[in-house]
Image 1 (cartoon, rainbow, N blue to C red):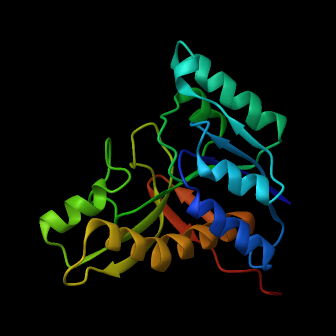
Image 2: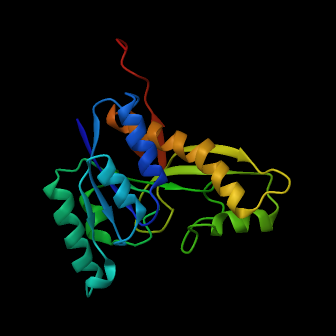
Length: 213
């Protein structure tokens, strides 16, 4: 069984996608053990409650240093014996202690095709605003392992989504969520849980399933 922690700051739509895929059997041998929010009123906590999952708020502003914040996060993660950490719209940066404790075991979902429209400050609607300003014809979503630099860890999966005429940042955001994020994040989790992700430097290789599958 792969014990998962999902770190959130907002509505938790990707959290819901994970919960739904576990419920329908697509994610076998996986369970969300805890949801950690950086904001006390994040709707993701309500989603966790509705699914019978413990929800905990760990606010950055309550800690005097990043080291103290890391220690608080690690305390929760270790208490729930977490194997895999998912950051899904988690807008609070944690530090070296967390990254070092979970090497190649923290996965982020980003609403753009990295290396485009990513890095510090590219969250919420911003990637979609910039994509439309730039005039790209294709955007999408990326899953990647987390490193200390924002959105710079090894890429696992990407899925492209066409930009349509008349798109607004909101309509593009919604289509990328439904057509890309909610597809590749559960699939990435499944591959991790099956031990099929091999990391070599910046390159992630998806291994074939066992012969008896």
